Structures are given as C-alpha cells and as structure tokens.
Amino acid sequence: METLDELDDVTISRAIIEHYARDLIDALDTEVAIAGGGPAGLMAGYCLARKGIKTTLFERKLSVGGGMWGGGMMFSRIVVQDTGRDVLSDLGIRTEHYRDKYWVADAIECVSTLTSGAVQAGLRIFNLVSVEDVMIRRDEKVSGLVINWSPVEMASLHVDPLTIRAKVVIDATGHACEVVGIVANKVGGRLNTESGSIMGERSMWAEEGERAILGNTREVYPGLYVAGMAANAVYGSPRMGAIFGGMLISGKKAAEMIIEEITANE
Image 1 (spheres, rainbow, N blue to C red):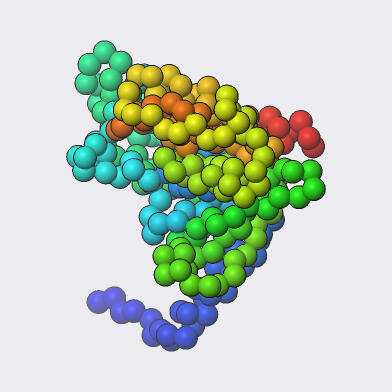
Image 2 (tube, rainbow, N blue to C red):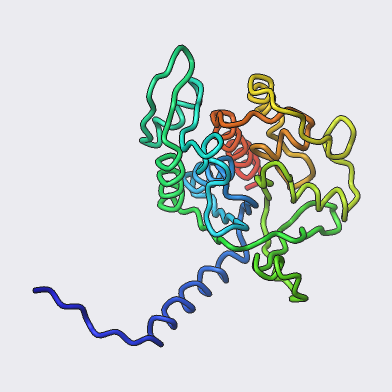
C-alpha cells in the first residue's frame, strides 16, 4: 500500500510564495503584455510564445477562456468555419462537421487545450489580476500596463498598483475594450479609427462581425494593438455570438503583426 510523505504547512506556503514572486518579478519586463485571457488573447499568447517572444497575459477572472467556456447560452459547444477549424486542428482540437463550412467543437476541450498549449509554449499567465491603467512616456507610446489584484478592484480598496513594462500591449479584453478605453479617457490621444475614438460595438450579425474582425485587428494607438471582440468594439463592427473562428484568427494575426514589428526593430 502506498503512503504519502509527511508534509509541512509552512513549507507549502513558502514554495507558493517564492515561485509566484519569482515569476512576477521576471514578468515586470516583458516584450508583449496581453490584457484579457479569452480566445483571442490566448491565441495571440500562444503564437508569440511559440516564436520565443517573452509574453505575459493578465486575466481579471479566476479562469481564462472568456466566453468560450459557455459556448452559446451555456450549451458548451462552439461553431467555427473552415479557417477556424484549421486553427483548432493545428492545436490538436477535434471538430465535427455539421454542414458545408460549419464545424462544431467542444468548448471545454478548446479552452483547456489552447491554454495548456500556450503555457507549454512559454506564455506566462497571471489570473485574478486587473489592468487599471497604462504606462505612457514622452513619445506618447503605450509602454506597459498598471496592474492590481482583481479583489482590490472589486472591493474598491485604496491600494496602489504595480507596473509592467512592455514593448507592445494587446487589448484582448472583449466587448469592453478596457485598455483602449483607458487610453481614450486618460491619455486623450486620437485612436486609429474613423472617428478618432472608440466607435462602439454594434448588434449581432455573425457574418459581418466575422468578416470585419481581421481588418479591425491592428495597432489602434502607438504600442497598443486590439484583438478579438475588443477590435470590433473599438472599430464599430457587430458582435458575432458563439462562432469563434474570427476570434482565434484575430489573435493569431495580432501575434504575427507584432512578431514582424519586434523583428524589424531588433
């Protein structure tokens, strides 16, 4: 019969604190900082980390995955089109053909597999961390994030934050486009949109939303990219519901654009 080793409670606590603190200190200087751990943020992090780009992702909630966990109205299945299916297949995620151009995947398998692949590729994820501000320097470029614990934000406690320095920031916070909102409200600079400001998410139209999301995935302000639903919200395009191909490909495109930028500047 197997027996377990004797354990010391303080040693367990010490191991957690030392390792977490070590990783957080290392993350204070990163190449790419991602706000939001939904499908677009995770996909961007996976692609960047796989190319050897030091990437750190901050997620406000306890779990990553955004709205993908719940599929459509808590039916834990998602739909992707052919191009989205190719992305899932590359990750080893199974899909089932429904009809021409429509594929169905298990939402739980999608999130867990993508998250595991991203972490194993080198993406460092900090959950329960909220982004409350950005770092701006004399060149008016976003040069990092200001973070705090999510429970601090939720309880409205007056606790000062910490800072993360990054070459590039990705806003993948979904419908709220929170980082771009901070830039628009606090920095006051003109965004790379038709109006110069956040144009706002439009009502559901899956076809148009999916078509628009790739064009909307871009640098919206110096040093700040948008991906996923945040991109459509910033540029005034429709939401698309429980079809996730565009979200995944948007994250991949943002990563490719940033890799090209970082490589060109080396």
